Image (cartoon, rainbow, N blue to C red; front, side, top):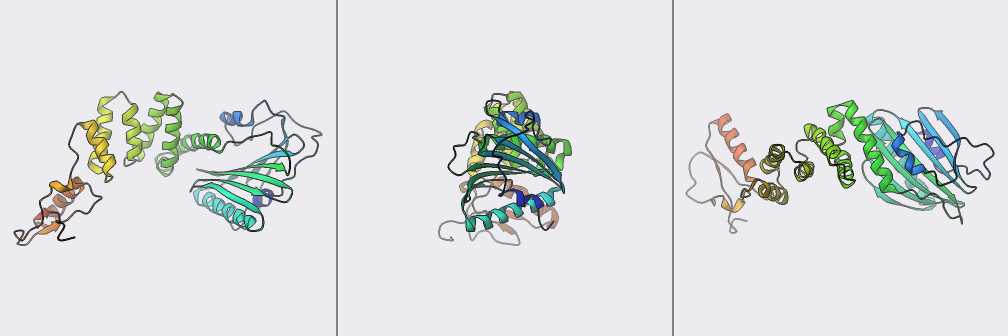
Length: 313
């Protein structure tokens, strides 16, 4: 997809001076009902136009005479959505070279940008989802006070929920692909006090991302299932390389964390045909033990684990 047609509507969004015929507030068809609080009922916000062209659906809302909100959605598979997101970034970079503007936040799955044109200022939120890219464009005529105050974090939290629900329907591969945003959504649910729901989200995530150690800790710290928490802690303790994560898991398990200093020093007494593995931090010595046993099974060559003293380094 060389060019996204909806990019042309991002910046020259027309703001109605007067709403002659407004319909009752309706959410964009591609947004779940839980997005409704963003649109609110305390603002004079009206749906003035909706369209669907070349796979892009757009809903435009008027907020008084000098303000508008456009919400668009481009549907496609994962590569097409990634390409669309990159095209938006490139387009905004080009716009910002000739106008004032800045990226407030950019990650691999979302962005928050501010653009100041000659006659208006714009706030843009873009969210990549499993099968879509959603673009929010809030435009205000220069010199006007905005009535709508979009919050990027709150909107992103809703996008994370939508990502999780769509990934859950698609299956394990999609859940694994959206690991970071799903973990973030689980934290939002925990912060909202819905522990049971958050634990179900974490269990679904860990089933497909067993090496997401921070998700394991979220689960450990909130579950009442001691056996499940212990299994999570053991996974972190045996596989993590981050000292802090290993230490936290060891504390839960009431074990001494593995210590590189406990490994014997390499010396001249280590002779003969053998393989010597020397761990370099950061490294979990347990990983080295497993590597040594596996190498011995494959080659029948003895393996030792040694460390270097300061004179060797």
